[in-house]
Amino acid sequence: MRNARDLFDLTGRIAIVTGGRGLYGASITIGLCEMGATVVIASRNAAKCEELASELREQGYQAYGMALDLSDDESIKALAKNVYDRFGKIDILVNNAVDRRNLTSLADATREKLQDSASTNLNGQILLSQAVLEYMIPAESGSIINISSMRGLDCPHFPFYPETWGDQPVNYTTEKWAMVGLTKYMAGRYGKHGIRVNCIAPGGFSPGLANNPAKQAFINNYIENCPLHRWASDDDIKGPVAFLASDASGYVTGATLVMDGGWTIW
Image (cartoon, rainbow, N blue to C red):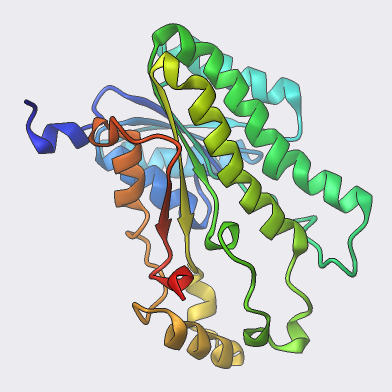
């Protein structure tokens, strides 16, 4: 029987975090580093990724920035190959990136906007998983973590949003629901190879919004109706990611871990 602390240890593991310098992305990256993993931070802006990676290396962690365009098949394949060639394995993939440029209300949706959004936010995640699985399958191990949202379990509570904000994006909700389904599909298909696939559905995390007086009514409504009566913090996603990435969740696959302060229990 292993010590419980050892089950969470990620020393020697190689992880890829897409969008790994964004809102939740930075916390995911830092949390994995703190647990001992070597983390590749990947997004379209490789320089920004390397900036965070450099800061983490100065603190004694192992992190590296690399370029990734999830709308480009060659970029996806190149990232997986570059990581494998450099480190000899890929243990963890966190599909976290979100391209918000083509999020649209149903009333304003066009085929072009919907396709461009899904190209990154859904299809890109599928194809990156495909590329990484090429290396995980022969190793007979691996953990893929898809970052959905509480929007992947419900829909926007429209009465909370002022009319001046416009409608909430139909494709964000749709894509985040799809990430939950993708998790179940991959978990069922690749479990026989020792590969676990799980999902996290986080709640509201927007540090800038929390201090915005112009949006105070929305802020107050959110906090009042969230059972824990607060926004998510920088640290809240670290534990769920560390759990699902590590041997501590060795018999967990196909699950969606809800991290929303209780929002979706209502």
